[in-house]
Image 1: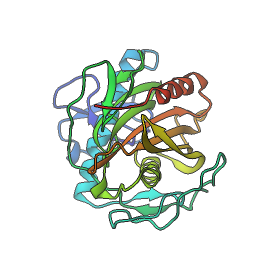
Image 2: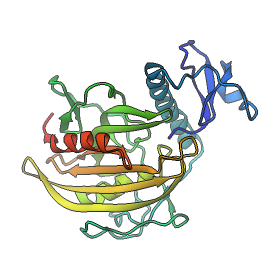
Image 3: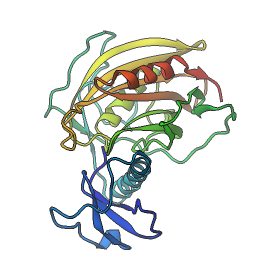
Length: 297
């Protein structure tokens, strides 16, 4: 889920960075991550403990946040393209460099084969935060869902830099791999023009972003119009497949994206949730959150 690189030291040393190789932390730290080369192969574990859940929750939060910062810096300094799969919707403005058509409503949509992904530059949204009610629910982009109890913990959902007003929760599954639930907004000025198109565009960027290292393909399971509190929306459920060397029992996630037109002409609103393929308890929690989706700030 997280790419190798220098990240803020999970041990809490201010101003120090420790290297994550995708499996473990280095013993070496640095105050200058940009000018320090990666440690050589086979470096010693810098103190990560698989058996201590609280420690790894902090590590996951730091890695996700650090990865977002590193990815954002890279994208703004040297333009790069995320891999795109052919299941995405046709563009309506130039912000989306896509050429395919929407997957029709079906319970067994097409499958993206490894190696068929194309490149697309996903937009980077400006910072925007809206006021929300303090009612114990997760709010973002004119939508809200119920919050899940511990061991879920509050955290910004990393790697979704094409959304605004985003808030989310994470759940550690194994070290370096998390499930999440998040709500936010998608700006119409950046190419999100209707719920169906936006759901496909969101999932294409999400599946091929740095959030999913080792992405191999996507299978759409559900694609259908929905109504949330009287507002039109679109629900897309897909299996995102990956190769995850740190734990080969993990083959990917079931990802749900619901995009709703709440009547704000400047943005569409979305909820996204994912559970590891085959993880029935977490999938049940994600389904519970989906059922709680409401329109309102």
